[in-house]
Structure formats: structure tokens, C-alpha cells
Length: 102
Image 1 (spheres, rainbow, N blue to C red):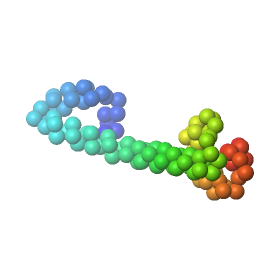
Image 2 (image 1 turned 120 degrees about the vertical axis):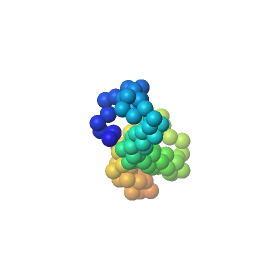
Image 3 (image 1 turned 180 degrees about the vertical axis):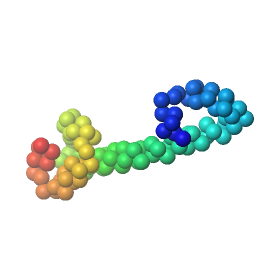
Image 4 (image 1 turned 60 degrees about the horizontal axis):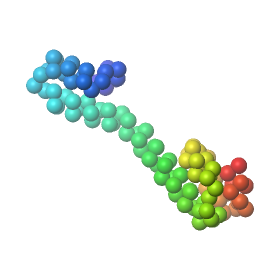
């Protein structure tokens, strides 16, 4: 159902539902909301996982190298999952942040 209505806003969907099935508006809007959540959920989970990994990696960097320069958190938060994984494998072998992140 959701793919058919991707271009409509909430107000327009409510109006369509009122015309087609006036007594089932709440039920249909709830069903539509659930479909939106199910469609978007995998992306939300991936973003949350990557943010958590970046935060954990930043904590490890602070433990290993002390206070971090301003450029480090931004670089880490913008890194993709493969890059974070690669960096994490070498965190204890690197002599400096530059050796690890550049």
C-alpha cells in the first residue's frame, strides 16, 4: 500500500481515506503508519548502529591518545562502517592519530 502513496502528505492521505472509507480512517492511518515504520526501520537501525560504533571508537581513541583534536570526531562520525572497522583493527598498533586516521 505504501508505495502507491509515497507522493502524498498526511493531510491528503486522510482525505483520500475519508472519501473511500469514512468509518475506517483511524484503522487505515494506523496501518499506513506501521507500513512506513516497517519500510524505514532497516535504515534507522543501520544509522543507529553506525552512530554507536563511531561513539565507541571515539571513546577508545580518547583512552589511547588522550584529548582529541577537533577534526577527529568529525572524521570518525563521517566514516563508513568499513572504515571504522579497518581503523579499529589498528588502534593499538598506531603510534599517533595521524598514523591511524590519515
